[in-house]
Amino acid sequence: MKILFGLVLVCLSSFAIGADDLTLLTAKTSGSTTQYSTNLQVIVLMTVLTLLPSILLMMTSFVRILIVLSILRQAIGLGQTPPNMVLVGMSLFLTFFIMSPVLDETYVKGVKPFLDAKIEAPVALEEGSKPIKSFMLKNTREEDLRLFMEISKKKADSSQNIPLTTLVPAFITSELKSAFTIGFLLYIPFIVIDLIVASVLMSLGMMMLSPMMIALPLKLLVFVLVDGWSMIMGSLASSFQV
Image 1 (cartoon, helix red, strand yellow):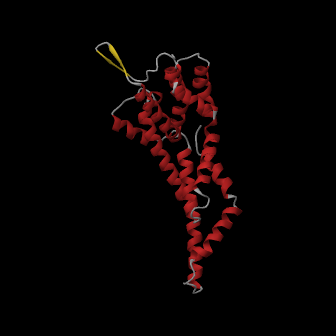
Image 2 (spheres, helix red, strand yellow):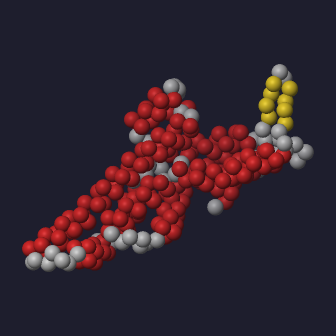
Image 3 (cartoon, rainbow, N blue to C red):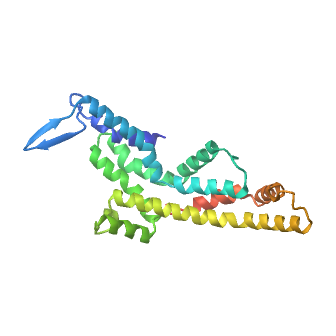
């Protein structure tokens, strides 16, 4: 958590630098500088604080993990069990586990030097974003990245020079593809169990009995016997290149 707190401090550094000047936005016209009102600065600050968690989550492994766990719950047929709060909590802490090397590197290169007043905020943001950008590049498909590069009509000499405005949507698109692919593979064994149960009930003439009533405990039993949660968590953690 201290890493995320440090990132927030970096984003809000314009307030920390110079107590007499609280200018967040300036507009230069004909060599003159216009300072905006404090009310507008507060609005911009609150907007940044509101969007920062979503931005950080979209640049990590959180999206893939949460979608896979949600699809797994639907494949088993448990409805709202585990509840959404549990799935989000599991996804969040597994994200911290997967992203811990990246966050540690971000803290060492960007946040800590800024907190020690060794570098300025723009340099801290640039250096701190490099490990996150490297993580996204490793886990983004080339075709998705090429697609958004063509849409944006921007060229980059190297992968490290790709702007975040192009890399982030490519990364999210690639994560959605990976999540739905894993979810499809998870659905197959549970569909097989449903088909077997429905065929057996049909052959016994129990057409009035709901196949879901019989299939659900069988799916839970199989999932527990194969230690499904450990397999899912381990597979998700190993599916990322850090």
